[in-house]
Structures are given as C-alpha cells and as structure tokens.
Length: 152
Image (cartoon, rainbow, N blue to C red):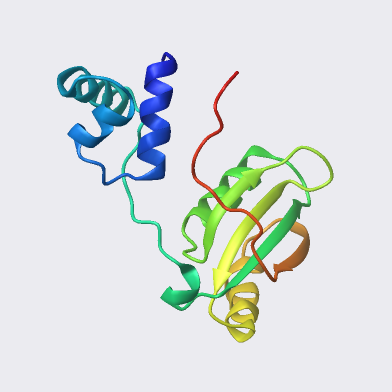
C-alpha cells in the first residue's frame, strides 16, 4: 500500500458515498486507475466494507458505557468462551484485548440505566470466568472519528 492508497482510504473514510469520479478528483487520479486501486484495496481486505454512521442518541441508544473485564484465569477454553459470548451480545459494539491489569475493554451502548442493569445481570454476569468488572459511564464525547491518521 502506498501513499495514494492511503489517500484514497482517508477520503472514503470521510465520505463512503463518494462517486468514483469525485474520489478520483480528490486524490488527483483519473477515474480508471482510481477505481482499480479501490477494487484492489477491497479484494485485499484493506477496505472491509461500507456502512452508515448513525447518531446513537437519535437512534435511541444514548448511553455509552466502557466496561473493563478481568478474567479469573487465562486458559484457552475460558478465553475462547468469553470472546465467543461477547461476539453474540448486540449491546457490545467493541471488545479490545488489553495489556495490563484488565484483560478486556468493552464499549457498550444502551437506552437506559435500567437496560444497562439488565445487560449486566442477564448477559455479562452470565459469562463464566469473569473475576472483576469495572464500569465507567461516558457523559460526553470530545472527539470521535473513523478517519485514520496520516502515517509518517
């Protein structure tokens, strides 16, 4: 991947609905080479897909919660089971594997505190092998982007 591919990716991250003509103009290419590069990025799995960015409050899910999870042991079966369970829970949008004191960081969205309590009691607590859970509620967003930084 070269600098032109990265430029294409950044423009598509800013606006995934650009026509090929508009994209080509923004990255200083003619339409045919631009389309060829986009198709190559897609076939190589660099571009994984396209989606709509939706305002979670307008959608009805105004509460964002960050949940740090530590497992009670680190056997492969427990890790595989935890990760498979997390993958099935719709309220968990992101799950990051961490270095340090906690094992995972989850980003959870819900419509109310009651819904979060229900999520904790019926879904997260039901997963075997969790030693501790630490919750932080986000009360605002300072920055949120899907556009990658320019590499140096």
